Image (cartoon, rainbow, N blue to C red; front, side, top):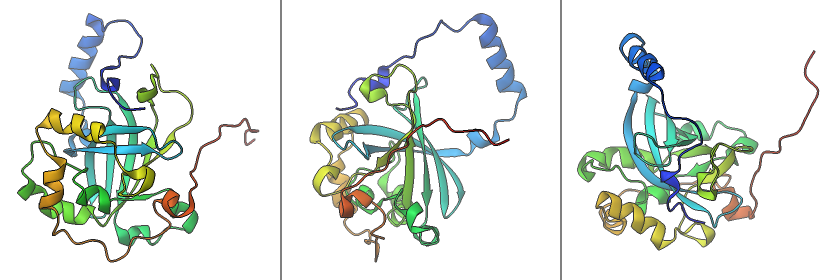
Length: 232
């Protein structure tokens, strides 16, 4: 299943009223929105459902840099003002990744191929400006939970979050050409050209085999929602 048309999906509900618009306008003027103002970078890339890798989607990350080793991203289905918020991704350095337990490491994916292949792109930002950041991102790992599966037609966020994987150059991690073409045409970019320009970006010396767990083990991870007794 592809993401075609999913970014145009509108959830059910009545139109925004005048009184609601007044509240929004007042909040914009009077309230501080400091975390939102820190989302300085827009990344266009792709993600793959960890337990159904036939489902490949285009994603738009709005990045808040906490420090040079930790990024947190709000993930949207598009870059439109009414885009659905479909998940969240955390990005950490290779140094921080190595401090995690093996059970935790299994939930993360690598970014080296995503960067080197041209999948990870900065719309409207010249490649020469993005180059230093790309060298850093290639060495990072991400954990991306999808909370709204609009690609399957969900009108509202339904069920448990799904763990997402990054594109890879082998097996089910290879992106379908039509998914990439749709993104490239939207932004007038060429993923193949970006790949060529990034040929000199150094590969990480080592990618931990606990990341991209499916590649080595052919297994995925799911959340199971169960009813349990509350703590007294």
